[in-house]
Amino acid sequence: MTEIGFHYNAPDKLNYACRLVRKAVNARGLRVVVVGDPQTLDAVDAALWQLSPVDFVAHCRADAPAHVVARSPVVLSADGADAASLPHREMLVNLGLEVPAGFERYERMIDIVSAEANDRQVGRSRWRHYADRGYTIQPHDFAKSS
Image (tube, rainbow, N blue to C red; front, top):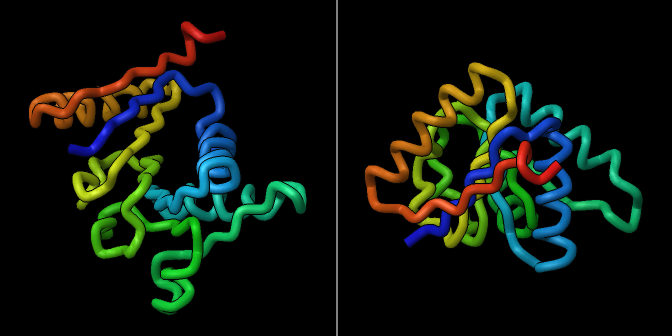
């Protein structure tokens, strides 16, 4: 069963996601799919290009040619796309508002929620979705860690 980490009250959701992805890829050698709306994915893409040369994380969009997607350690996939259709299965990072389609096929999923009211509201809905299906959720509250 997919291990779910629920990281909420994130003060800077984008920055945190980039640090998380960098650590997963560079320190742990994981292959990661990041799900979000197009504007968020554009911001993640730009932020990953801003990392220092030693921290750089190769990445591509899910609609890149299949051979590029297969070789890229990080794939950026739009909300609503079936993340299970991608070749990666190790880690899924959700920056979107929806429950990612196909999340249950991943070893681990990190769902990141900011402190903004709307994001928290839809985050609660996703939490209930996972809990109602019997997933054990590992919470991480940024408000308690600062």
